[in-house]
Amino acid sequence: MIKEKYRHSLLIALAILSLLLLGNRQIQAQDNSKSKATPGVQLLLLSEEEPPQPPNIVFVTSTTYNGNVGGLAGADQKCQARAEAAGLPKNTYKAWLSTSSVNAIDRLGSARGWVRVDGKPFADTKADISIGKIFYPPRVDELGNYDNSSGHVWTATLPNGTGHPALGSCSSWEVSTISTVGEIGWSDSTAGMFTDSGSKSCSDTARLYCFGIDKNVKVTVAPMAGRIAFFTKSEWITVGGVASADQKCMDEAQQAGLSGTFKALLATEGASAASRFNVSGQPWVRRDGVAIASTPAELFSADFLNSPINQSGDGLEYFGAYGAWGGAIDPTTAGTSETTCNNWASSSGANTGVGGRAASTAQQRFFAFDYGVNCNAGWLHLYCLQE
Image (cartoon, rainbow, N blue to C red):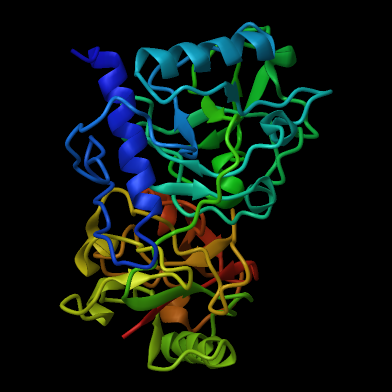
């Protein structure tokens, strides 16, 4: 009789390895708005032998901690304990934390290849992480549950993996006083936002990111077929109405060698952003083949997307905390003059609009994180969807 803990570990390893062997075969994207991650592959346990060289696991802890986690060593112990309690594959687990003298990315050593507990790929290399080339956000905990909370995770780490210049590390993660702060990331996000999204008092609680560091296995994504969605490389000035935004999408699509018709994901005065698109077609995917949502409708309605629309049309850039005009509180709500810069006809500081953040998958952050943005702000881009 195989012990239940070992059985759980082996099933996870088999599922992950099987996903890696799928190559370019199409797989069904998951609905990340659900509270429990569905195993990537359902397998019968046929052997006690663990498959060779599964990739590393990355997870966000199901438990929360104040800023005093016992320093880096104490945080690592917490990661190791959570992994072992959940029966994850054997590995050395390190917390993604920086201090004034230690960079989080350096703590990963020579490791390569990380997947979530549900088998979805997170990133391939340390270099990819540092430039924001992340496939799916790290919001699955060690038990396979999605983090549907505020998503706050202690990091003190910049997007490139180095320590935050503000040194908000709760005094090297050994202090939990209300007057001390720690920098945090958001577990629903990718690119820079998963690690650098603000700060909070060290007396508050947040989760930890835990990375396996023993394996060196290439991780790729099995591309899905679908309509292309991308984030514009440059900002859009809010004049010329929605037709001007659509033209910008078309211009960048053509420059990237994309065919078909592209329109901006924008609400207008009296109409929602979702109403501009056909939800009966294929789901939208990024240039790397990652599906934004499981179905077209869920891109507009799910509490969380599978992955953000933060890759450029040419596939060369992944954007972090960059702004994108949205025009309403969510994609299914009509815009007003106050949320759409006077129906996208004004670039005056006297008018306002609403926008979201590129690297987030939480609907409230993806589409409408920034309210009352002056229309002369000049720093917001566009989400572009293929018809």
